[in-house]
Length: 334
Ligand SMILES: NC(=O)c1ccc[n+]([C@@H]2O[C@H](COP(=O)([O-])OP(=O)(O)OC[C@H]3O[C@@H](n4cnc5c(N)ncnc54)[C@H](O)[C@@H]3O)[C@@H](O)[C@H]2O)c1
Image (cartoon, rainbow, N blue to C red; front, side, top):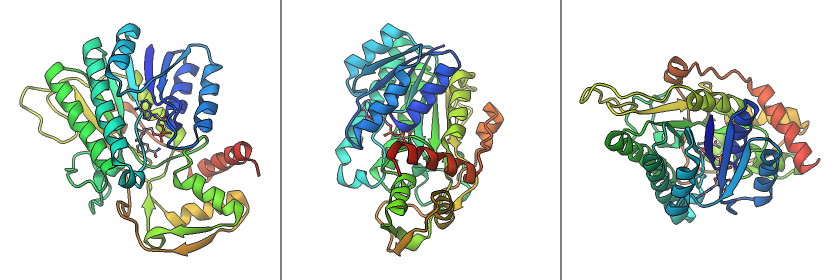
């Protein structure tokens, strides 16, 4: 297949693009290499992709509707995997307009491009943050998600609603994947695993928000990649009976939303203990109050994705963290 992967210099985008290339598919990667975090990490990821046959890179902003539209028209890809976004919950409190630009304008631009080019399937990244602080666990796609706690979460929920409009009006097959705290080699430096690994290695005190009382459904990146590929390379969603389906996760349009997590939430302290073991060093902690926008726990029910695409994450935490630490040491030294 020929695919466009946006956010290809990002953490998940690089892993997805690599896996596609390894399977012999042709990938055009799109990214702005924005400076939200160290752009050197992005160019190092990109360098790994550029060594592979079948890869081509376009540095452009998906919110540039004309440029992205003409790329999709010229490439005529069989799939667009849209992972480019402004991520991060806390940053959305300081820099809300970055989310409006990349996640709202950018997403509309991706929908327009796919619609006009007649792309057979758009797969895009949503987020577990759409569940807000829902007390109903595990989180199910069939539950309503109308109470986001950050502009980041609201932008991802808006993407799902916008996607439905294009599936309904233009019959664009479109699937949203709600990722749950992805970790692994080449991860994002603004996320807990790298921040914690760095602090433990350097003997710095780690501030544990909400007094360390957090649970996360940490998902190893290889499991995520397997799920993304199963959806992207598999059958696009088909339309149901007109007027029939009013479930939040599906529709009478060719539209689906799936959780893609590990379905085994881990206490933050447990994650830290495994990280300490792999680093061979104990951490120092200070317990402080919760921060605005934080959610207490995340827990994915992935039974729909398992039923429809055979998704079955199987990386134990100990192995995933060991692989992450091996990369962390090699890349950052120490
Ligand atoms: N990593 C996680 O745990 C997680 C959890 C939930 C959702 N997600 C979502 O998954 C997707 C990938 O996340 P990631 O962790 O790989 O993030 P990342 O920041 O590493 O990757 C995103 C990439 O998109 C690029 N980008 C940003 N705005 C752009 C724009 N307007 N045009 C073109 N490129 C742009 C960035 O330069 C970056 O390389 C994002 O949509 C994110 O919101 C990630």
